Image (tube, helix red, strand yellow):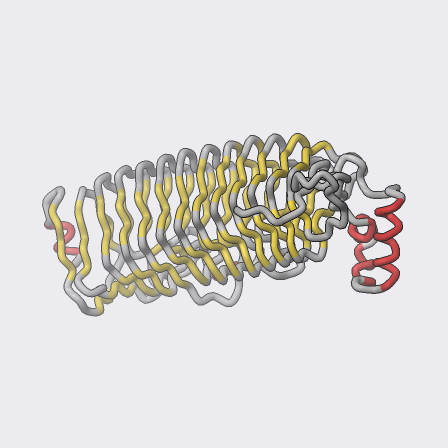
Amino acid sequence: MKQAIEQANAYDTLLIQKGLYRIQNIVIDKPLTLIGQQFPILDIQFKNEIFTVKSNDVTIKGIEFRNVGMTSMIDWAAIKVLEASNIRILNNRIRNCYFGIYLSASDHCLVQGNDVQGNPKEEQNTGNGIHAWKCDSILIQHNHTQGHRDGIYFEFVTNSTIQHNDSQQNIRYGLHFMFSHNNGYFYNHFHKNGAGVAVMYTKFVTMKHNIFEQNWGGAAYGLLLKDISDSHIEQNSFKTNTVGVYMEGCSRSVFTKNQFIANGYALRVQANCDDNTLTYSNFRGNTFDVATNGDVVLNHVSHNYWDKYEGYDLNRDGIGDVPFRPVSLYATVIERIPQAMMLLRSFTVTLLDRIEKIIPTLTPEGMKDEKPQMKPLKL
């Protein structure tokens, strides 16, 4: 196979017949299309990486890659793309590889329909399923990633889209992106990952129609937002997570039309978050709807449905006549004394919250919904 690739002319199409090929690292340094027939297996036996792409206009389709070795010096991958454009990685299977698909300093690439699965026991023994570093204008769609450190990882990536992917049972994050601006994430399913999804040090992010669910653990979140600004989070579903959304250092972002269902905490908002908007969302079945560690909250909350709201609607306009304070006294106590969690479901907690509703004293004055919805919103 290596000889055939070396002898091929630019823009040739090579068909790889079904079978098992025990190979060494292959460098692709010219425009080529490589198409597997019934998923031929390329096995490198943990010695190196398989394809290293150094040319523009390369397509890799319908191949199964196996057993890429682990090294602490080089990020070996099943398919590594270096400083290239117009690369298409389509409908491949990747099994037991340190990194699956690795894009470095590349642009206008398509990663579509790939099934990337690892089987490590520890975070340090695996890389990421789909990894992009310093890329622009790439599209990651309809992929399945499982059993890696992070299912999908972006760092210094701009003007790109992640959509219709399924990322599950990864050791750390289903999706992890840092310093990656002007990107969009749509219709993805992130579930049963070690810590959910992390978005850090980023601005101008759009996240719509994603599902974050079953991310449980002491440090697990559906979505972790750290130092994020000017972003839009809309029509997402946060179900059965330890924390639906954790916000730290977030500014000027809009959260609207989201579902928060059966989470431990729906929202945990740190005091250094400001000028964010939370509107037209449903909060149902969460142990705590909102928690914060500050006394002053500089965010806008309005027109949400809260299943814990016990107010009335005398003029029948569908909006409660009295504001709702989503931060309970008990949640405030836990933020200051975490050991108080052992009192959950006790009569003492119920009594504290009832007293706080009558005479608000400790919960943040600024964190209240002035126009709570009386019925769940149809989202």
